[in-house]
Length: 201
Image 1 (cartoon, rainbow, N blue to C red):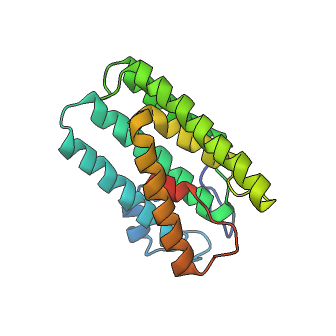
Image 2 (cartoon, rainbow, N blue to C red):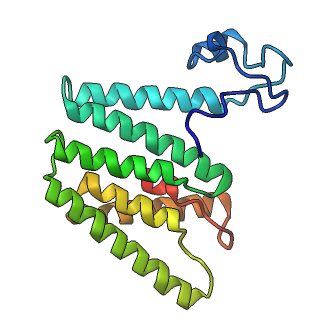
């Protein structure tokens, strides 16, 4: 998957979106939620995602003002929001996003802009990968089907570079509770559950 190509386009008429029509939130409001060329409705998901990203950026800047860690958290938020949207739509976590989460966390630790040392960040990645890969392997044997996608394993490992090995159980617990609530609300007990958004929380 490429972050730059193809350029943003209308999913209905395939027309490339002009720069002036691609301003977050404002363009959607100015166009009244419709494509300039074919007048097809533009999903409300786009401005909602843009608003969520803006709020995440604002929160990071308020909690950690004038901090390199705030910038790292902003980048993390962008990676996780984009990955969550794709996972919800396609039940797929592209490597470009999981690797983005991983390397941003490691670089922040290396640059001493993270609460973690680089050693703790690397340990978190290794522990996260081993733990979730083992869970994936055991669940596959017991259930005789893939119970956890490899993308989820890689994302959990990548998050280890942000929270360290000691906080990974908390991430797993929160994600599991989120997944259970989502399954109950959407009545998807026997179908595949996109776990990426749960981990992203």
